[in-house]
Image (cartoon, rainbow, N blue to C red; front, side, top):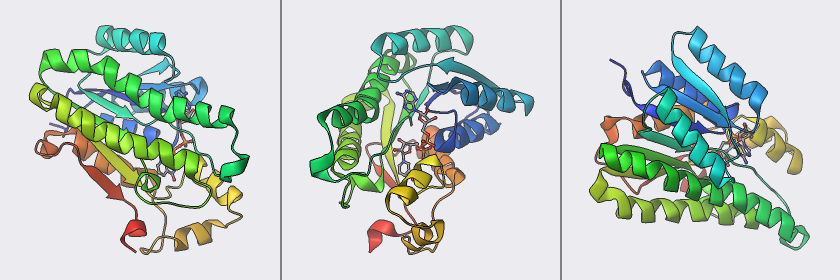
Length: 251
Ligand SMILES: NC(=O)c1ccc[n+]([C@@H]2O[C@H](COP(=O)([O-])OP(=O)(O)OC[C@H]3O[C@@H](n4cnc5c(N)ncnc54)[C@H](O)[C@@H]3O)[C@@H](O)[C@H]2O)c1
């Protein structure tokens, strides 16, 4: 028996990066995984790779900002894999930009994906989870949702919103047996960290050195935590913020 045997898990933004690793680890532990993303090529490839390894995975083209698309995805997942019992709200984008240079369009675009996408995801999986009287929702926040950094007003606002939305939903849904938690990585070695290095004019070594532990995270460092929060091992854990940051916020 896997640690999340026969759970039906939706992972948004699962084509690459942290989402891909989460999908792979959930499938390894027995979950049937629905990978959703706007990146269809890598999403299909990730699902195929999981199936080749003996797991169950299906890719769905999906923009998390689109409410009708959420309805379609949840219906299709129900038909194809079963009613969802795990949601990993992982899709997100990053912006490092001085406050006064950030356009309203950039602000709205980022909020739409990082905040509205999480709201819509929770809203549309809850009915299925409520029927099953069980569910685990895992929202990707960031250390940027806990502490401040220069040129992070827009991104930090979005991740701070995810942190508090998680706690609000956890209280609202506790009676239904639905747990809601957020995870807060520091830099993790994905395309997003490449962008961070480029915008900060920093080498990968310099990004590593920002973490007291001496290295930035790998996607699996976050995936292991997601598997834990998806599984019954965390049945007493809801509304919490699980910080995975190599000591970044302990300083
Ligand atoms: N990598 C880091 O350093 C880091 C640190 C803290 C938090 N996070 C958070 O973790 C999550 C995953 O980050 P990552 O590093 O894997 O990023 P990534 O850029 O490697 O992958 C993000 C994925 O989200 C998808 N996506 C973007 N917009 C979407 C939309 N509108 N609808 C559906 N999918 C969309 C992208 O196509 C991509 O596949 C994000 O929420 C990010 O903010 C990342």
